[in-house]
Image 1: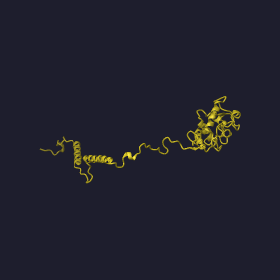
Image 2: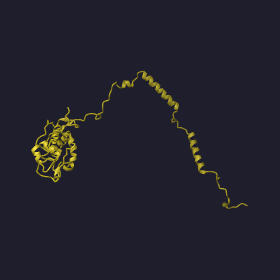
Image 3: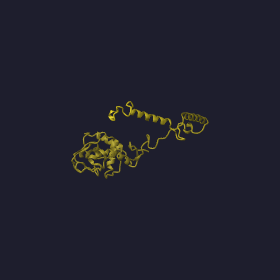
Image 4: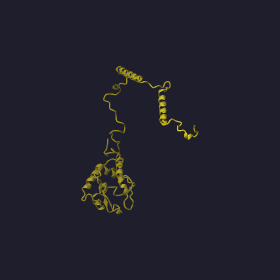
Length: 257
């Protein structure tokens, strides 16, 4: 006698031995493989066979050999001259920099050196009026160049040209490691900036003389004073003057033809 109770039927609708996941994966793979095998290329878009590619390459090699032997154009030896050397591109290689008028070239060098003076004298060269004096119109900056060079190289202590002693009391030496080129540049820059207009160039030769004079002081490596300046350094640095319009190399500051 059969029972109508579904709980009494021990056999499920699907065979328990079937792995549904594996079966589905197999169907997907077989469908993809079938699609690849039966793919139909559009007319005119079939890939070229390897044999055709190889045959074209052989034909091109043979044609190239025939044309070369026939003396046709586009041969390397005819296109490039023997011993030809390509010229350097403008602005490249080891070309010398373009010359500049002496005043402009020296001042440009000096502006870079002066950047370390900004903290005291300011970018405008006017100082702060209390601790650091102005360089604009200063008697120590203008006029005799030897006194100005001694102040830059050794610093100065006590009152300045106006008789005033500023709060800082002492300007430290700036000449340590300074080359003649740098000294010539910064002196030229300050004497022609901030409203100053000496209109001349302190040459490298003059700056070198300043280095020698500084080294020969009785008390080298100590700040100068107003008394020492008045007694020993009220003079122009020796050396041949340089016309401010003379073209010079902006790197070494030497005149060029």
